[in-house]
Amino acid sequence: MENKKRRLEEQLCFSLQTVSKQFNRMYTKALKPFNLTYPQYLVLLVLWEYSDQRISDLGEKLQLDTGTLTPMLKRMEKNGFINRNRAVEDERIVIVSLSEKAMQLESDIYQCVDGCLTQLTLNEADYFTLIKQINDLSQQVNKIK
Image (cartoon, rainbow, N blue to C red):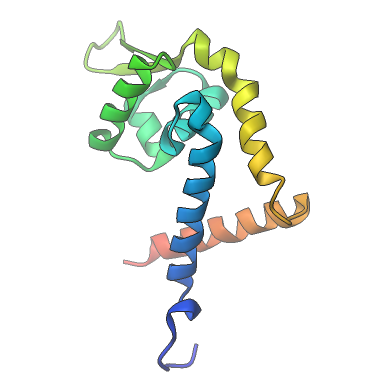
């Protein structure tokens, strides 16, 4: 790209930050009836897909450190969405699993989130193309030292 002054709305980083905040607000509204936050929803997504997970594995998948993840998991456990148990073979390891409540609410939660996504003017092909482009961009940015 040519080296010139750019306006705020011409900054890719600002556009990504703005849409991220907008998605967070959209998901917050959709998840409010379940008393879930967007990051908590992401935890449930991982557990619905992969079942029981060590906290460290959850953190890796979600790109969150344990200092951020642990308090969130404690709130989720208090609200009845997950169970946290120490591994039998090594009590230092905490295994996170879905509660019965989370398993029962899975389709209802998906339905609320899908209701938001259907309001976007993206067809399925464009939706997955955009995800791929963002993931590719993320990998490129991650390689920058």
